[in-house]
Image 1 (cartoon, rainbow, N blue to C red):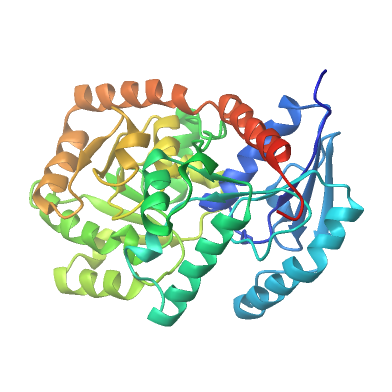
Image 2: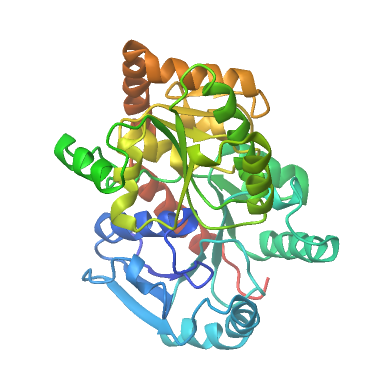
Length: 388
């Protein structure tokens, strides 16, 4: 007997109004899942300020917009927890949801509908981001979420093993399913790249690019030291940093002052979605010195836009990058500086890296990833025992 179509709820409320990592993850899912399962229904719970990021006009997609927004952040956290605890169960019943997917970890309580959660990483427990008290609370919340849901999606095998070690999760319930590559990260035309460089005042400039929020775990201050060392060989190199402030901004600013390279560092802040592929494509190299990653989407984005990448050789990054990046210790200033200089100076090395990156992308086809996610939903539905 053919299994009946499912009604899947996708909760986007823990995703901010910016299409950062988790937003991109959900966006790719919503670009692919409805067409892969045309007889299923996808009910997307959105906030007032993030709904613009998702494709909601597909025939089998239904939106439920919740009257919440992500700013100011503290009230949103409290209101969201109350909404998930008190309001969401009624909405799941009203919308006849078979499985609810929380693509960003937290689950308040076990409900009458099977739940799937995605945990992208547990970096905050390796590189402290919050106070000890809040970190302890969040670790307990993750522990509760993992034991409350039917299935957990880990976006890399490294993240899966970390979950098993750190929160004692049942390995049989944690499914490793990579994130999918977004086809919007293709290399723009050379005319578009040239015009973009001119518009940004970088026409003849050689620069390395970092994309991401300035968290301590992203290790962005390290790149200032790398820039200073690389400029000893190529004096006109620049570093462009695209992203919002985070808990690593202060150290980043201090490092710029102490190394005297302020005239060679350009901060461009938040980048509109349509400009992100252009920034990747016009850079000479993408720099990704993260100290901890559960996945690392910028690696795939750089490979899609045919830009060489230097990345850390730890956590999930080698798993995701494959042969399509130069992987180095994220504390090795000399090694990073040398690799940056070589990529700028050696066209044959650039070509080798770009071609390897393109081959690597085949492992992250969004349709293949989407089919695996649909299997997780079906498995969660079939294994659910109400009240258990």
